[in-house]
Length: 372
Image 1 (cartoon, rainbow, N blue to C red):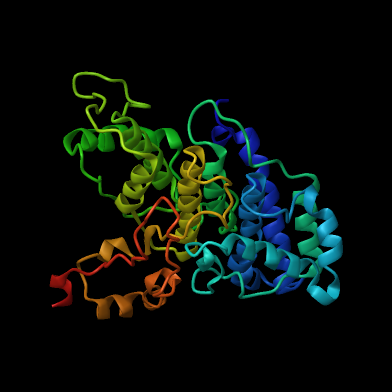
Image 2 (cartoon, rainbow, N blue to C red):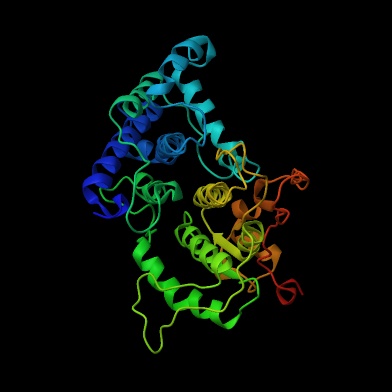
């Protein structure tokens, strides 16, 4: 297998183990003799607690955060997770906060984005989850021969849909994740012709239902090739008379290429937690480009310069079709998320940072016509 994201022998047991932990968390929150309805009521919170651990493990495996769940953190846990400090539940909470050190990702702890804070799990299930990541869980950092690298977060992007639905094999409310090779095929047929037609311009793209960010991170990879080399080749589709590589672009310095990528890759997602995961993956993907090009000496979440991915929480089907007031009536919880949970005055990019990126933007779902 060229990429573990495609390997059911790897992803299947991982999802199964995580779902077992979700069941245990739900039972601890609802009580051991709770009705099915009571278990369903707490499941989103249980799934969030377990899913965030997968995000931390992925980040930790790629050295993006300090040790929290893997074996390297065992001594730290014994010292910093006594009962008076919140025990293992408190330790997990601090681990999850480690994902939020970048201004674009702190929305992961915003209660409007997930049910993480809705219910508290027991100490026992928290300890079992941490022990599993420490001793038995597989690493989420792996080598690939084709497709997205493990630092893209492809697998943790896929996992979310399987944990939020209690049905075996459930798809998280109907969400379906796109395999990377299908994403590449679609980008071959759309982004490459666009690059050929609009040479010299910043390519503007939007994924109106971006999910956890699969298309976004693949577009980042495609655009990096285009902006830095001046050419872009097919990755899945066979070249032919109607399927030609884009050539003739002007190669740009890495900093300018990254600026254009951030300015031109937009997304919209109706589920807040899913959008927050897309934002995390986007930030890491940009940080990885900066690190690989020598602009960032150390790749960690707390070293990636502050910027805001243009990813909005909203119902794209209503874009430019209803007024802001009508939208708030239809989606009051979504309407309450303004500016993606980011303060109006976001930290400025330090002057010495070689990349100047756009300020925080909440994409406007309503045109002037809709406002009228």
